[in-house]
Each structure stands twice: as C-alpha cells, then as structure tokens.
Amino acid sequence: MKEKEIIEFIKKNIKIKNKDVFTGIGDDTAVIKYKKDEYFLITVDSIVENVHFTTEKATYYQIGKKAIAVNLSDIASMGGIPLYAVISAGIPEGKEKIIKQLLNGFKFMAEKYRFDIVGGNLTKSNALFIDVCIVGKVEKKYLKLRSGAKPGELIYTTGTLGASQIKKHLNIKPRIEEGRFLVKNFPVSSMIDISDGLSSDLITLAKESKVGFKIFLDKIPVSSEAKKISKTEKEAIFHALNDGEDYELVFTVPEKFRNKIPEKINSTKITYIGEITKKIQYTGIYRKEKIKITPSGYDHFF
Amino acid sequence: MKEKEIIEFIKKNIKIKNKDVFTGIGDDTAVIKYKKDEYFLITVDSIVENVHFTTEKATYYQIGKKAIAVNLSDIASMGGIPLYAVISAGIPEGKEKIIKQLLNGFKFMAEKYRFDIVGGNLTKSNALFIDVCIVGKVEKKYLKLRSGAKPGELIYTTGTLGASQIKKHLNIKPRIEEGRFLVKNFPVSSMIDISDGLSSDLITLAKESKVGFKIFLDKIPVSSEAKKISKTEKEAIFHALNDGEDYELVFTVPEKFRNKIPEKINSTKITYIGEITKKIQYTGIYRKEKIKITPSGYDHFF
Image (cartoon, rainbow over the protein chains, first blue to last red):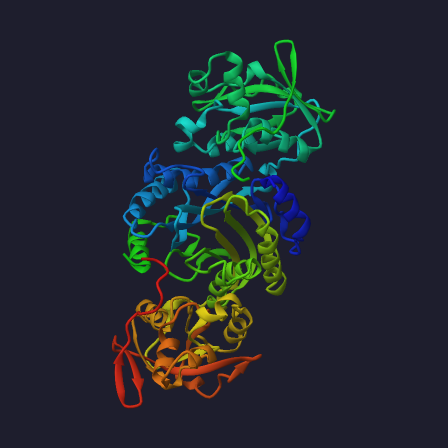
C-alpha cells in the first residue's frame, strides 16, 4: 500500500462537512475560507530518523531546518506565504541536548521565511521525529491547485533536479519567493512541489488536472550532484526525473506566455521542460526516443 | 531537562513578530486574532508507542481516538470548539494494515466532536507515532487562559481523577461541551486541562496567574480505578493528585459563584476542590495536615 493509495482510501472515507473547507486532503495543503479575498492554508509533514535523515550525515541544526522546509515548500506550491508553525518533536531519552540545536534550525527558518513559531510539543520517542504543521495564507486570486493544468499549456520547473539525497535535502530552499513572483505576474494554471520526484509529482498534477503530458528529457535542469554521480547523460537525467526531495516547484502556464517566463527569479533558474496534452499519456522524449513515464520517484512509505 | 524547562527555554528564544498572535507558546493552545470577535486556536500534540500507549494493551482504534482526544482537550481548556485537524502518522514498515483501524478512531472523534480532518501525512517510522494538529476557534469573550486566576477565587475540576493509565486514557472524553457550558454561563477566570496531573497542572495555572492555592485533598473526586488500586484513602487521593492523563478541566470562578456552579454538566461531575490564594504557596490540606504540593505529575519527557 503506497502513500498515494492510502490517501485515496482516506479521501473516500473522510467526508468534509464544514462549508468553509475549500480543499481538504489531496492537494499540497488544505485550503480553508478565511477572509473575503483570502484563504488559510494548513499543511503538515514530518521527518523521521533513518527515513528522511541520519544523524551520522546531518547535524541537528540541519535536521531542524529540513523539518520546516518541507512544509514551507507545500505552502509555496499553493502560491501562499507562511504565517504560523507548531512543532512536535519526539526525542530519544537522554538526548535532550539536541533540542537547542534543532531549535536553532527552526529559528533560522522562521526568521528567513518570516513566520512565527506559536506552539510546540515534546515527547520521548525511540526514533527521533519532528512533525511540523504550518498555517499560511494566500489571496483567493493567487491560489494555485494541482488541478488547473489544461491541454497545450507549458510545463516549467524551478531550480535543478536530482541527487538531492547527497547534499541539497539538508539545505532545502523553499520556493516561497519564486512562487509568489510567479502567481503575481503570470496566470499560472497549476502548481505542485517536487517531493517524491519529478515523474511522480508531475503525474499527480496531471491526474488531478485530468490531462497528460510530454516532457523533453534533455531539457530537464540536472543538478551538478546528479551529473557527478552519473556515468552517462541519460543516467543523470533519470536521477533528475525520479529522485525525490528536490523541493522545487513545477507549474504550468498558457502557451502564449512561452517567451514571457523569465529564465531566472532572483538566482533561481526557471526551465521549460514540456507540455500538457489532452491525451492522458505520460511521455518522456529523449532525442528521438519516446519513453513512458511512470511514478518511480521516492516513496517515503511502503 | 523537563518539558516545562524546555518550553521556558523556547519562550525566551522564540520571539513572536506577527501582531495577530495573541498568545504563542505557553498556554494550552496558541491564540491568533481572526475575526473581529473571534480567535483561532492552534494546538499540536503527539502520542508515541511505549510512551503514551502500548500495542499490547490498546487497539489501534483506541490509539487513533486518543491521538485526537488529547488535542481536543487543549481546545476545550481555552473555551473553544474544534474546526479542522491535520494528522501525521509514523507507521512501522509492514504494518500498513493498522491505518484503517487508526482512521476509524479518527473518524469517530471527528463525527462526535464535529470537526473536519483536512490533511494528513504518512511516513515510515520504527516507533508508531501519531501527531495531530487541531485548529479551533473561540469567541473573544469566551477565551480562557491559564493566567486569569485571582486571589479568593474558587477552584473546580470536572470528572474524576487518578489511575487513568489503567483504562480511561484509552477512552478520553474531551470536555468540549462542558467547557462551552462553563464559559457561556459563568465568568470563569482561568482554565487548564489536566494532562500531566492535577498537582503539576494546577501549579502551572497558579504560576501563570502569579497566585498560590490551597486544595482540600479530601474533596478531590477520586476515580473508581484509583480507589481500586489503593490500600488507603490517602493513597487513592495521591493518585488523583499526581497521576497524569486525566484530561479533565480545572477552572476558577469568583467566590460569589460558590453555590451557582452546577454539580453536574450533562453527566460530568463538577467538584469544588480549593481556593486561589494571594500568597504564592501550593498547599494541600488533608484533615488537619498541611502538605506542600509539588509538581509530581507525570512528565512524558525526561
């Protein structure tokens, strides 16, 4: 049973009653009616020792930063900004000293991304885990869902992809600013963040939008880490396509904006990688080869 | 380092910037300005295998209910009602079958206490944990903090206390309705829920209110479980005083309401147990004996 199957099961079994819930389970965050022209966003994500990090390779400061970053990335993918965080940590007995280091990681992110840590909870746990819930907001006109992509639209990604496990996953830069720039300046039709891998997450977006896509594999911006660990160009591309935890934004815009999307937002690359199709097929094009894209990204679950 | 010391450390180190935050870390929930006459409440709490439950003694359905209940109790203690929950679960590999049972527990609580589960997250974890964040609301006029108790006021508790670990902690009845009845009908001046134990939590309330208290130990409503496991009346009382996880409400009202607080709300007992004092001493009175009350409740942490 994969996480996505479980979420499907939950969506079928959990019925939303409150009319203020605009979107419940199934997008990057829940979307709740708030003010006349604004929504609240609520998201939760946890990181667990030996699943999302090891204490041999990561400092507790980095672990603290990562726990926050993965949630901010969800807020970014909705076009929103973070407001409040509550943090729950399970700490192995006798390891209370790490709390200050984790806290420095939380603080760094709260200052950099301008939100407040308003609550927390500590408990003993054999395995170190940190669970973060972030409440954010977005203007109604700027809300982006996974479900808005339309045939003929262009697909873009921020940053570079692949082999995040080597280094980048401990220094994630949630694309809040890039997301805000995009939603304020372009009619972005759908957006998702890459947590499981470009292939998995783009398929999720396509399914929610009831469309297909073709991506030009040689256009995918491959990270220098992915290039380093690969023997061939193709191998590097497949790292970029399938590795998880990039925490970049993938988004779609109408075709007429082809030459209007900037190549960079601040110092973050923005790259055209493919197109949305009416036919529900997920196709990768590598030179003249056509490849069927499957959701082979990383599954943190079973 | 106890949880409360850590929270003190965090309160000193985390500065709130957003003016909409009415109360950050330090009460049962965070309190956020929302509408003109309403606040948002945000709370987070997790339960962990072998700390808050064992899978030998609890069913997954009960574990699911408990994970929700401990958070609802925090909402109740602010005088509020729950609106939305997001749930994060860490599940041991190969145990995905338990998810449906946990979910049935979540669903039961969502239906009974009328809130929506709007998001979730699943991850692998060696130790089973469930972390729940609940967003609720309370009318400004009904908001209750820990810090409002004044000398001369009366102290009451809901329900019966002690030995919750035997049975009750797996069938917690969060006092949402009782809390609402109290805040709507009486000028409750402070309120807290008993999670660590009456002694610990009443001292927390007293410290936040900058007051002391005396409690009449023989007035404490002792649970039948606490009586069963005790050889003497005094032993039973000390279970009621110090055991954790009662999830009852302790509250204070002005002296003139002495005969106006009902003995029951629905079927829940309401019991007068003591008085707030100006002198910052925490005193228990047992017959003619005076006992210094110390925070000897259960600490889920170190």
